[in-house]
Each structure stands twice: as structure tokens, then as C-alpha cells.
Image 1 (cartoon, rainbow over the protein chains, first blue to last red):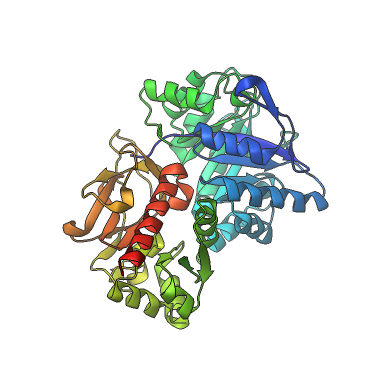
Image 2 (cartoon, rainbow over the protein chains, first blue to last red; image 1 turned 90 degrees about the vertical axis):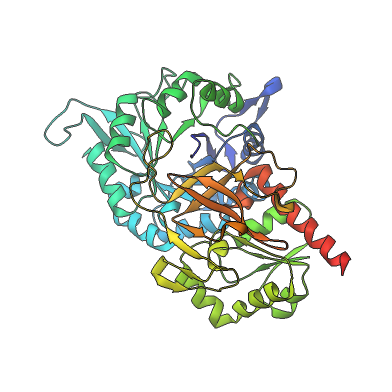
Amino acid sequence: MLSKRVIPCLDVRDGLLTKGIKFAGNKDIGDPVESARRYYEEGADEIVFYDITASAEARGIFLDVVERVAEQIFIPFSVGGGISSVPQMREVLLAGAEKVSVNSAAVQNPRIIGEGAAAFGSQAIVVGMDVLAVPASEAVPSGYEIVIHGGRRRTGLDAIAWARRCQELGAGELCVNSIDADGTGDGYELALTKAVARAVSIPVIASGGAGEPRHMYEAVSEGGASAALVASIVHFGQYSIRDCKEYMASRGAKMRLTW
Amino acid sequence: MLAILDYGAGNQTSVRRALEHLGIPCAVTADTAVAESAGGIVFPGVGAAGQAMTILRQSGLDGILRRAAGRGQPLLGVCLGCQILLEESEENNTKTLGVMPGICRRFEDNLIQEDGSPAPVPHMGWNSLRVRTASPLLAGIDASAEFYFVHSYYVDIAPDLVIATTMYGREFCSVYGREGLWAVQFHPEKSGRPGLALLRNFYDYCREAAHAQ
């Protein structure tokens, strides 16, 4: 049986983490390669890198980070942020990532999902969805709407319908991020995770809101997610990846505990 | 030195990086002389069986693999490499290398995992092994170790060649082989320390085999 996955997410700007990560001993690390190596050693099942760099010249710096990560960590990792074409996908996959994540670009041009899947296989294509809770309406019957550009722009797309469409177009996995829960530490938006996981057969990664290992367990049990994406819960030294995984296993989730 | 057979497989760079990390001398090569003089061959693979076979035949690399198996040069097939060492694949009904007896089959639809949850294809993620036969390839690797899988097809091979199996809706063979000719369905190059240990075991076997000659 597959293990549930714990996936730390690292935001990278101009080749550095946007915020230093506190590891054991309160050591603050700002280098994404060193941080990834530490998470790898702590038992992360996968790592996500988000490039939040805007400029084209910083793109090269980011690709260099991806290559250096690939030389040091021997688990799968995915890369997202600003990817909107097959050549851009090829760049990061050749640099050593297993998967690429597309978000706003997929909403604006859904064909990119199928093109990516045809070129690299569905397993390499993750669609990231930013979701906002709204009053249910005819256009958004689930009460969950897709937003883009970091949550600044609403699209009128229903999150559940969009999730199904992404699967049909060839996405291999969906990362479902609740804009409402993100940063609160109050737990994932479980109703959303669950609704998406029920609507599709591809794996769903729950994102946004983890403040305690309990929340991560809820995401993979009640929420039906295959993986829990984490950021501040592990970045600020509050819990290690091992703490989270051991807790989840103690509640009965199948976790990878030997590495 | 290990030769990583170069036929454009998506994971050949990852395999090279993992071996380099371990300090194992290796080369990604399509050169017959280099591959045949290597202490062992790693045969990587990602993608579709039909396309891979076309490339292998056109480049003549299929002959290197057949000869390696014939003369006992150590060989390790990885993922698609593991599948196409067999006689045929249900993936586009492809006739494959036939280095080992067996067929590669597609996972059935609607399989259910042990906890009652669905087992969608592809099988993607971390899963464990049930070791059936002790093998130097798995020496020193903890029984609870997990490996990273990404595949839609599984190998169906004679029970006496099965080294380990994995459960995903059904039990399937995840490691097979006989001495010096092994194949793994998962990606050791992406399976953390246990995967690196497996690659190290293969290299150690290759070195001992070379000394024994």
C-alpha cells in the first residue's frame, strides 16, 4: 500500500529562500539547497520549490538551484512558479525535477496541461489550484472558486469542476491550496480537500493551514488527500518532518518511517 | 566502472547523479566498447515500452543487453528497463528484449488498496517490499524500507525469479533476477538512502565479480 506523503514547500526568490528556515539548534538557513538537504535527511517524502522570481535573468539562477538540489537529494521533487510553456517544463525536468507544477498559466491556457502530459507523461504534471471560499452560486455551485495570481484575481471557475477538467486534460496530481486557510495554522480546509479528492481519481495534495501534525493527519484521513504540503509548521522549527510523520503513523496513517 | 546505458531515458541523469554521490565511477554511454568493458551495466528507463524498443533496436543497444546477459556481465534494469528485459509488454503489445522470461502487464482498473481506498493507475509514490528470496542486491537494507515507484505496468515472471513483491491493489513483483542479472520496478535513484544502498550493493557485486575472474 502507498504511504501518505509529507511535502515541505520552499519559496525561492533570486536563488534564496524568501524566509530563512529554522532547523534544530535554531540555525537559520537561507540557502534552498542546504534546506532541501536537511528536509531530505529529516524524512521528507518529496519537496516542492516555488520560484517567485519575476525577472527572466533570475530564471537561470533558479535553474542552477534545481540542478544543485538534484545533485544532493535523492527523493522526488517538483518545481513551480512562472511555468507556462512546454520548453519551460523541459528546462526544469532536465535540470533534475521529477514534476512541474502549473497554476495560473493552466487556468489561462488549459491546453498546457495536455501538452505537458503528452511530452513528459501525466506523472510529471501537477496542477496547483488556489481556492477561495465564496457564497455558492450558479457558476460556483460548490462555493469554492479558483483564484489566480496569488489569490488576487477571481476567475469565476468552480474548483470542483476545474479539478475534474484538469484530470481529463491529463494532470497527474492536484495540489489544492486554500487561500482562506493559508497562513492561519488552524488546519486545512478539509471540506475542500475532501470534495476535490472525491471528484477525481488522481492524487490530491492538501495545502494551506497546517499548524499541528494533527491537521496533517486529518488531511490524509478525513480529507482523503494522498499528501500534506507543509510550510511554516516545519520552517519555524516548531516540528520536524519526523515529528509530523511519527504522529500521523501513530494515528494509523501508513507513513514511510525508515530512510 | 558502471556504464549507464544512454538511449535518452528520462532518468539517466538522476542515476548518474546518485552513483556520483556514492563515489562510484560511472559513465552515461551508448558506446558498445565502453559498455561491454564496464564492470556492470545500469539500464535505466522512463516512458513507453514501444518507443524505448524502437530506439534500442535502431541504435543497436539491444545487442549490448543481450550479450551482457549471455556472458554474465552484471546488469541492473530500472523501472522501464526492468520491464523491457522481459519477452513482451502489454503496452502497445510490444515485443521486448527477451533477456528474461516473462510478460509485462497493465494494472487492472478499479483495484482496491488494503485500507479500502482505490488504487488508481499509475502506481506513484512510496511503497514497501516483501522480500521472497535473499539477494545481495538487498543486503543490509532494512525490511521496512520504502522505495519510490512510478509505473502503470508490472512484471509477471516465474516465481523462482521473484526476489521481492509489493502490494498495490494486487501483489506484484518489484525486484527480480538471478545472480548478476537483476531488475527493480522502483527508482533506486529517487528512493533516498535505501535506494542508494541498493545501487552500492550492485556496484560491490560488480567489483567482486570482476576480481573473481
